[in-house]
Image (cartoon, rainbow, N blue to C red; front, side, top):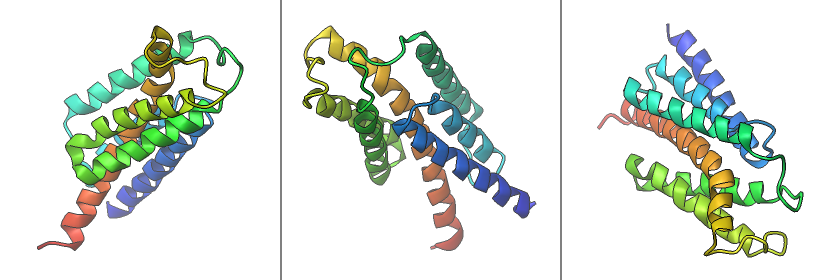
Length: 172
């Protein structure tokens, strides 16, 4: 039984890695492999979250996938550098939220995604995104929301693994 759990753990780690790669190189929606990793960890003793929470993340993944499907291809200037800014800053925000506590993973991902879009809007390639305009909000929803959902799920999976490791090996 434990061998199967570690095999599923390896698969979920692979899916988390794929989700992190898809944040920077968006060939597909990064939230889908992150959700698969979350669901896979449900079948192991490493994670115990409610089905309601898994369903909520599934709905968020579906919304992000639908938004991706209906978006026009590419950016107005044809550049995809913003994925680096938004994806990595959202991942960093999620990890920072993880250091504060499991309740702050999503908040850290949101703040990180916002800061990534702000940083990209200050570069010469992103100067067409003006901060207090509707263009900024639309761009944040188009680029930031998928990164936020994916990094929050990856952060939730990492949090579950850290909690399991801490309770099993540091039983104080």
